Every structure is written in C-alpha cells, then in structure tokens.
Image 1 (tube, rainbow, N blue to C red):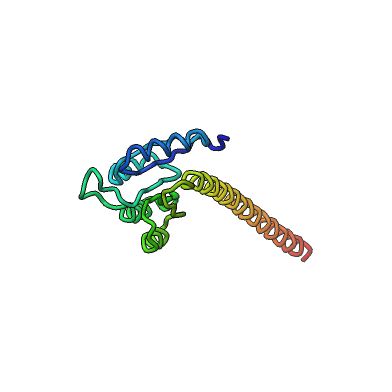
Image 2 (cartoon, rainbow, N blue to C red):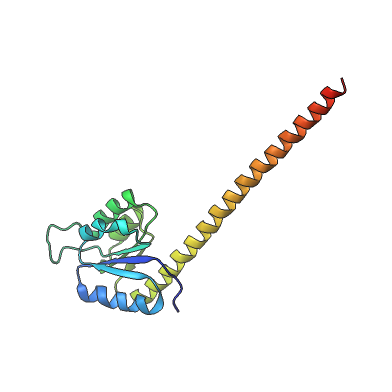
Length: 170
C-alpha cells in the first residue's frame, strides 16, 4: 500500500538490526527513500537532504559513549528544521522521556515492542494526512489573499469611476 513519493525518512538507531527491520517494514508499505544512521550526529550532518520524517531512538550511545541521546538530537534538529516531523521510537518506557520528547517537538513517542511497527505505520499515515491538510490550507490562504486583493482593487476602481463621473458633471 505505497502512498507517498519523492520523500525521505531517516531512521536513527544505534542497533543496526532494529534499523534494518523497520526499514524493511516501512519499505513494504510506503514509497519513501529510507536512510539509516547509527547515531544522531551523522543524521544531523545529512539533514540538508530535507527528510520528511526522522525516527529517533533515545539511547544512541552503544557504539560511541559520547554520542548525544535522542532528545538532545531532537532539540538540535527542531531548532534548524522545525518542519521536519520527528517520531521517537525507543525502548525507554519512562514517562519523563516521553514528556521531554513531546516538549521538544516530537510528533509522537513509540515504545519498542510487538506493536511498535504497526504504530509507526499509523503515525506515518497521520503525518502524511497532516501534511496534506497543511498544504491545502496554505493553498486556500493564497487564494483568499489573491481574491481579497482583487476585490479591493475592484472597489477602488468603482470609487474612482464614481468620483470621475461626478467630477465631469460639474
């Protein structure tokens, strides 16, 4: 059930097997270009590719103990790329981590488990619907702005013509 084209998703998890399993799952369901990263710093370096969605793990320090955690990456990412939707996918079933993730701009928080991949699919569908609604809304705003300008010009022209006609009769 592929639904999107010309968009990319970054999967950021220090567990390569987790990244590959999620990539395979999402590749079967969507037409996104999916790129995987084993740390947040590499993902941030590649943000110029303008991914539509970034899926971040909380713990990203398995290979590098000095690596930033997912919430730190989330903060940095949202400062520079506020339109990118970020989904936290983590083994942390702690309320504080989920609250911090949402506070710093995550679209949603998913705990790794047997239903995590299907939840991810639903969330990505929701993000896509949100994007469609925002796009339609922006189009309507542009049309309303243009129509308002045209109406204002017609009113000004009518006033001008009325005064011009009144001036000629004097």
